[in-house]
Image 1: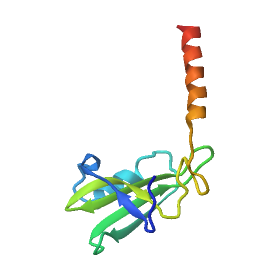
Image 2 (image 1 turned 45 degrees about the vertical axis):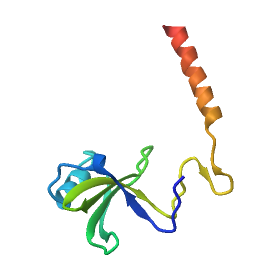
Image 3 (image 1 turned 120 degrees about the horizontal axis):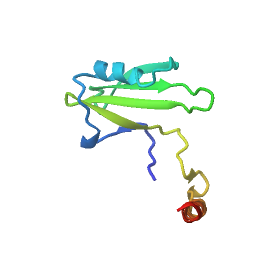
Length: 122
């Protein structure tokens, strides 16, 4: 479980992209959905000295589709796809009173259903 008093971006070498600069990443991120979905792009500087440009492209929820967030950061002149951990966000499988929520029962029910379906049809 990740908790922090501050919001932060998470990335490592596997998140490195081939984009030459953050503007190229933003253009590609804004084009991820070709259905004219509304979006908002915000840019900021992050890091200990605010010397790393970062951007977030938010696609708004529509009908049954959830909101999608895409984050990118320029770190040491390389562009990375990142996860953003918001200090105020409710995290999945986490309850403010009980801590991490155990999904074992749900997973067992799903596994039993899949097993029964496989046996029935194969």
